Image (cartoon, rainbow over all chains, first blue to last red; front, side, top):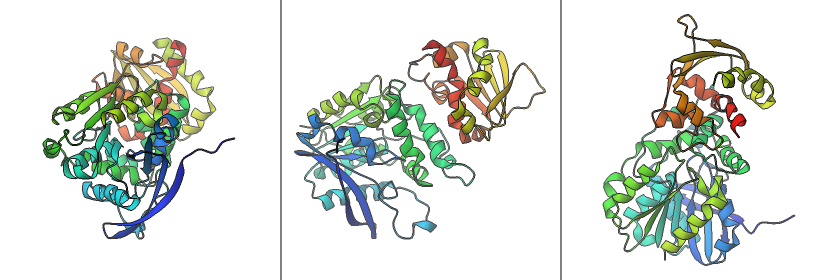
Length: 278
Length: 123
């Protein structure tokens, strides 16, 4: 029997003029590292790193569930709304969490849509951060699927979403972590994955902003898995090439959810990325 | 390859979770590997028949079209990137999915696991 060192609490804040109750978890001490989950999932994607004493002895890891995801319940009135994440609301959410938790210039580590918004923040709000770890991140990814598949009255969007994103998990991933990763998609609320993908696959506003990123002030390091079909190594390299000073590491045996699907495989890459944030 | 396809009905029948996942799957799927066609007739999660083609008379819901080298790579226990998933094959230009793709997507886990069953022989 054991109790993990991760603790969870709730932040009540206002985003877009609406009250939001945001669930966050944290572990460790030292340099703050704010971790952003992928579309259709939640903060538990970071559970392994937050339980890794070798990382948390010098880093304070914080991860939160985006509104509508997992323990961050949707705002009042959600029942008649169509959930569609936008760049502006995503940025406001991340900054509200930083303000609410009193984080001083954290490193921002985001995966997939979290990596996308990390790059947006690197371009638009670099003064709030000390560096950016852009995991499975790129400038823009038009959908190779129909996002409306994942919110239909005649099928289970979560199960369909999980089956689709399984294409992005490496065959090297341990079976138990593959299925833990997929479970989060299976369990996502109706229309949430679709609403996240609307941001991820339709908003191309980052493309024209990459040249604003100053890696001399805030380093940017890309981590990308060779088995990622959604954001391929070529996508990450293309994006990094547009940011002078950005660096890229391709992770040969990992996929789109490296911290969740294969934590032991991902750990050395993440430690190396943290070292580059110095 | 033919043996792999012919072995699918028994393999599916031996997996209760696939029968449960496929309980609403009663479709015919065309699998074409190079010029060799097989019509896979599913009935409530069981693969009731594997019918050799070609045929212009058998209606099918969707078709998966690939080549022999690609499907052999797909069936490896640790496939190379791109060969690890049917949508990966499509993305790298080694497969096409034609027809009613939504019928595939609604039962995507079922079909993915069925199509990957021959990996077990190569483990």
